[in-house]
Image (tube, rainbow, N blue to C red; front, side, top):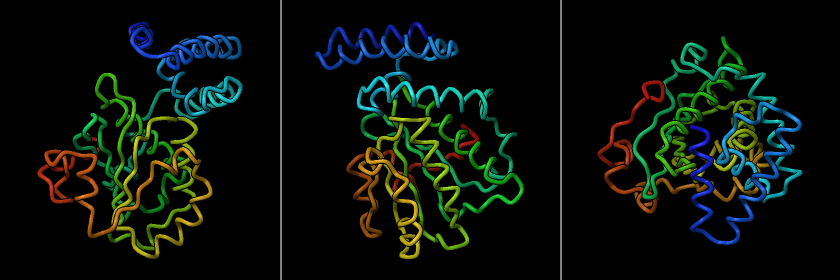
Length: 251
């Protein structure tokens, strides 16, 4: 499977421009660097390596540092992936859903802020594993040729009891450090005024690439804003569309 994916990257190069050829050259160079320092990197496909390169603007030194950090995290924190049984308290909150895709085929992840509470049983570690569980599920649902997803953070009803700054910052770190170039766009909808106080604390932890992908949507323009990227047939019921939500654990 890995060889097939790597072949697809090379096929892309045959039909695209010089910048893509530069990427292929750097993928090969980065792979050599990585395999010298961590032989387990041989298991990673070219698409993954390319995402880390793009996240660091094709800088080999920065990309290799980022990738080696990712491998260390992967082997120590989630060596066997994450299953529902690993995150029972988080799954019980029923706060993450997948439904449909946008106009260019990116699957849609919806999270409900009002359903998130700090987990007193599993603690921050279980929440981090849940974040990995969610990202792995949404990535696994991507159609061939697609590498990104769209997120919708529904914050209607969010209150201070849902405030979890450590959790939010941890989720951002996982997204940015270990799932680079996976987020295509994030709609934040129905954010109450009190949420903005927490946002000011979290904002400095968001890198510039991610900041450009975040859009706050006026509560009176939610559906129209979503329709710019998502066909009517894929708008979820909660925003006036026809599609019911599917709990992420059921995917």
